Structure formats: structure tokens, C-alpha cells
Picture (cartoon, rainbow, N blue to C red):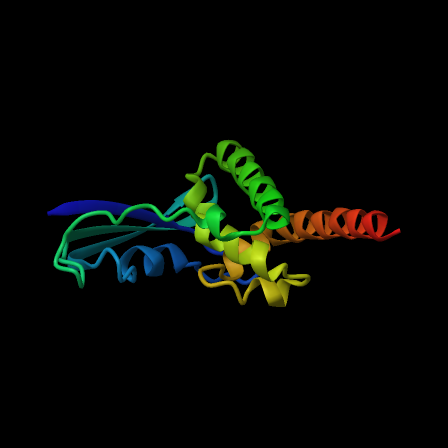
Length: 166
């Protein structure tokens, strides 16, 4: 039996809880888990409401019959050289944010989500919300910064292309 604690807080604008981290953890087909018990606790910390969820679970066999973590996929390897630059910038940004906010980087965005952002190059909040696992909470908290990085990278890429074609 394993334990995992999730602490969720309402999004300041919508008041809704962003439960995408729960969906990602328990909905991962490559790492299936059986929930044995859930205990929920609502509390207020520094005048902010929080919802703590203690889950007891056990790993289940994957479709291939094995248990445990899958090999990490190199999302960067699937990108073009120009896309790799944006991907690296997004990872650097995520690292700074995670240290500053005291959160693990994967809570802000997984490598897969950063690769999806890199490939799709969203230009609006609505397009950013189309990236799997980026809910209203994450997008309202970090979306404008991500969009600014994508716009800046697109502007630089456009300038390079124009200079190359002259």
C-alpha cells in the first residue's frame, strides 16, 4: 500500500478546484493505480481555503503485465531544432517557477505538456486550455507567462526566417 497527499486550493478567479493533478496521477494508463481509500480534509491556511486529499493506493499491472514506472519518454527528441529552443525555454521557466513557488515542476506542467505547447504554439488562453492537463487553475496562474514565451519565441523565429530569405 502506498500513500499520496494532494493539496488543492481554489482558483482565485473561478473559485473552482483544479483537480487535474489527481486526474493525471490516477488516470495514467501507463501506471495504473487502484485506489484503496480516500480521506478528505478541508482547512484554511494563511487565510486561504485548502482541500487536502490523502489517498491510499496500490500499483496495478500495466497492459504489458509489468508494474512500476515506465521508462521516461524523451519529449524533446520528437521536436525540430527550432521547437527544441522553445521547449528548453519553457523548461527553464518552469524550473524558476517551481523553485519560486515551492512546487514540483510537474505540478506546473509536465514535459509532455511543454512539448504539446511547443508543437501547437497556442496564441490565446482558449488555445492553451486545449492542451491536455492544463486546466483553468494552471492557465489562470501561469498561462499569460507561457503565452508570452511562445509569442517571444515566434517573433524571434519569424525574424530569423526573414533574414534567411533576404
